[in-house]
Length: 86
Length: 154
Image 1 (cartoon, rainbow over the protein chains, first blue to last red):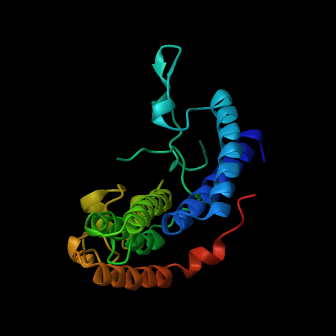
Image 2: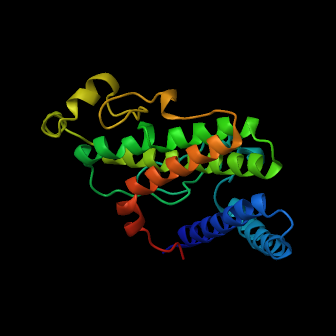
């Protein structure tokens, strides 16, 4: 598995964990353990996303920027294209 | 409001196109128990919920259903690539193809376009939550093959 895919997989796994913790907190908003876990996961995720964006492509449009003379957000591949991954 | 993350919640990589399966899978997009309906249901119900926790969870789950909708659409997109006219006819895919080619249209396997009648949004918290329980049970019934195929991400 190459670097990009490895990084992508790890970020996606953290995203999923973060989403699940968020859903739990939605109906248990005062749970300290869950909030602590969320903070942990966010730190890990932010570090990985920073690394990913530096090497590859922007993760969200709000963080996208111009690369050379081109708006980098439009850059493919888009996620549903076969055999490619962003 | 919404933002988009340029990824699928879980990767979709379908090696072998298969328009016959695509016609079935598409129900999980635009069918009565599909993800589009799920997203619209939760995102519409949340406005009349009397508790913050319910507003939050319906917003977040509704948003996640849009991500699921995207995965199903990606599956249909990949299942219908590189088709010859013979393959299209042989799979019975010609009826969909004449109106939509290989675009991904919100429709059910039985050729009914998605409709808002599939969702219940009553403004009564007990009624709406019961609608959600019933709806999610049907989603679970449509999914066993996908659940079995799931592998850990790392």
